[in-house]
Image 1 (cartoon, one colour):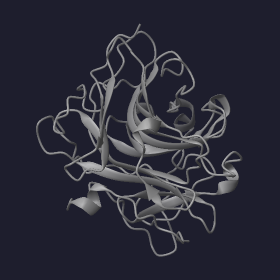
Image 2 (cartoon, rainbow, N blue to C red):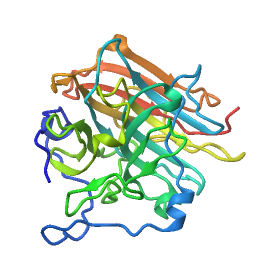
Image 3 (cartoon, one colour):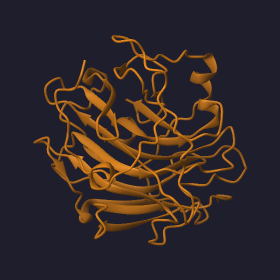
Length: 313
């Protein structure tokens, strides 16, 4: 099965030439797809990327923090969200922590929201190492429960080589050096109403049936672009993004570029600055975010986020 609709979203792939940093598995024979064997530990150890968007700060529970932008306009419905995300490999992420950069489309009350997340993540408990990998996560109860990648029923894998948890080719961005990005797109097919996950310009990984999301009957009601970290216990919270604060230099702090969404007419739309709500929990001032609006350098709408982590209080 293939999507009947491909959104013409902006991306770093369309504005400048870049090699793919996705690491394909061995291509499966025609008519078959890669399936990862699910272990018991996969289901018990993984930490969900939920966040309390409705609170006075951006912490969800003890030790979970975000730094990014919530997007919501009264009366608007959202049928997709996308961005080109700068890829780093945050170091010193402990086994009971994660550090991620993500996009999200969601609907409903914050405590009961239906949501689809996608982006990149370092989570040793989920992947068995500290490599940066892509991820997808869904929830229908505000993150109380949920599912990563293909670890439980729901996601329909379509691509014969790439999965929602595809590893990268060890081509991480470096401070002051070469920068790498990955294009991530979540969108609804207007014909089938299924929600598709697409990487780069044309890699349709698979889809979630719309029936999985009872609150998506009229699309999503809010979006998120940004960073997300999880910490447990008394240890310092992990680095987010490049581990540097936003400073306007695209070779320093981690960034999102070409942030867009799909409106009710299924057309890509640039965000309006008035609807961009900064979400940055002051974990000892260890994480920050800075919006630059429409870039003059062909990056579309862009922002930087991140920080070194540390003891949160």
